[in-house]
Every structure is written in C-alpha cells, then in structure tokens.
Amino acid sequence: MSSRPMDWENVLNEIDSIIQPSRGQGRVADYIPALATVDPMKFGLAVALGDGNVHTLGDADEYFSIQSISKVFTLSMVLRKVGDELWESVGREPSGSPFNSIVQLELEGGIPRNPLINAGAIVVTDHLVQQQGADATIAELIERMRTLASDSAIHVDQAVAYSESEAGSRNRALAYFLKSFGNLRSPVEETLKAYFSHCAIAMNCRQLARAALFLAFDGTDPISGIQMVSSKACRRVNAVMMTCGHYDNSGDFTYRIGLPGKSGVGGGILVVAPGNGAIAVWSPGLNEAGTSEVGSLALETLVRQTGWSVF
Ligand code: DON
Image (cartoon, rainbow, N blue to C red; front, side):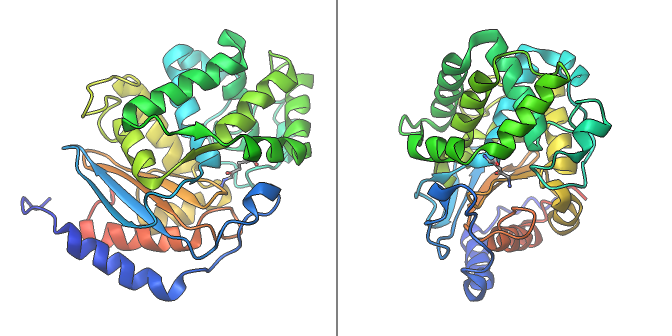
C-alpha cells in the first residue's frame, strides 16, 4: 500500500463521472409496495475512515431502507450474544439461489444455507427474539446504530415495515417451514415482526458507513472504542459477507469488487475495506439478484482508484 494520502476529491470525481451516464439503470424493487415509489435517479455514497473522516458524494444524507443490509448487524449481534452455537441452526455456504428461495430448505432439513439469505436471517433474528423478545431486540439494534453513527435520527420506517408485512407471504412461508423443522423457537409472528422491523431501518449512506466501521477494524469501532464483536467474530462476518452477501450474485460481486459486501433491495450496498474503512452506496435500480446496479459500478470504480480490493 502506498503511504501517500488518498486524494479523495479525485477518487469521488472519478466515481461521479463513471456513474453519471448509467444513473437510473436497473429495476426498483416493487414486491414491497412502499419501496416501489423511490426515485431511481437517486445516488449517494459515503466512505467512513478509521480516523473519523467521512467523504461523501451525491445524496449521501438522504434516508433509504437498508433492507437486507440489516442482516449484517443482526448477525454481528447474534454472534456476540449466542456465539458459535448459531452454526448449529444455520450454515455458511453460498446458496447459489435467490434471496427468498425455499427449495434448499426442504432438501437440507430446515437448515438455511447461510445467515444472509432470508431463511437464514430469519433464524438469526429468531435467536435474538428468543432471548429478549422482538421489541427489545429492535430497540437494542437501533440504539447501537445510533451510538456508532453518533446520530439519534436513525429509525425504523413503520410504513415500510407494515408494507413488507402485508406483502410478506414468502417470508411467512419460510418462517413456518423453518418452524415445521423445529428451527424457529419463538412464535412466528413475533420473529417476523422483528425481522420486518430491522429490514425497514431507515438510514443514510453517511450513517451506514459510520455504523459499520467496526467491521473494518477487527470488531471494535475505532472512533468510540466500543467493541461490537470479537475480532474472531468480525472475521466470520466479513467472510460470510464476501461469500454470501449478494446471494446468487456473490461470485460476480467478489470478482468485480473484491471486498466483503451486503446488498439490500432498497438499493443500498455496504462494503467493508478491512483496515481502511467502510463504504455505503445507494442507488435504487437493482439487477436480477437484488444488488444495486449503479452502486456496484461506483464500488468497482472506488476499488480501482483506491486499490482496496483484498486480492
Ligand atoms: O425479506 C425481504 O425480502 C426484504 N426485507 C429484504 C430482501 C433484501 O434486501 C434482499 N437483498 N438484496
């Protein structure tokens, strides 16, 4: 790595010039009605560094629905509270299937392939709900996010949570199927209430990059000194993000960007650059696998400019 300080203005200008012609590309998620009306032209990016600096571009202060990106935070929380016992109820292999697929669950005895597909994330959430109930789980999660981002405006968008629950037949099917295998301990609706709520957390790129910085620094937030997870658990979370963070698009994402990442159908992508920082990008148009198209392009450019790929 070069010891020259990074020229962030130049890096961000380059990203801007690369993404401009592609803005609006991809399909905005519409299976959650409350997300269907988001403006596809939006684009924001934030890079949070270990020294506390945050560099931003575009709509970095605008709130969006973090959706599946929340699964990284619930996974961190469960590894802290439950530890390696988690791996008895969920695997850690890429699924090669869409995020909401049900087919492997029957073939594999109700053990989801990994904690980032919907079935696996529902199991993760269920462990937390079993310990402390849905409301306390969400309250703790939000409190942690607010503390890390030093911003008390982070919240659950109740309209999005309600909309997802109303349209939630697929996740309900997954949860009841898990229950039939004995791999869901709390009442299904209690676990789903927590799951829909954490998916509906509203944050902006600046807050999200800042809140995830612990993942780039061995589990401890370098600004506040708060240990979120052990360094071992931090390596596990990053490994699962790298291999499973984009479902059946995980290989291509790693090929192009070479960093642990997690997509969300709200159009956000969170990426961890170990030892360097955390990056949040938001652009609502998605590819087939539910990963932001323009967000991926921006990250590809960022990695080229910074040399931050782990490969
Ligand atoms: O459960 C769902 O379908 C959504 N709350 C989250 C899906 C999602 O974000 C997939 N990621 N790209």
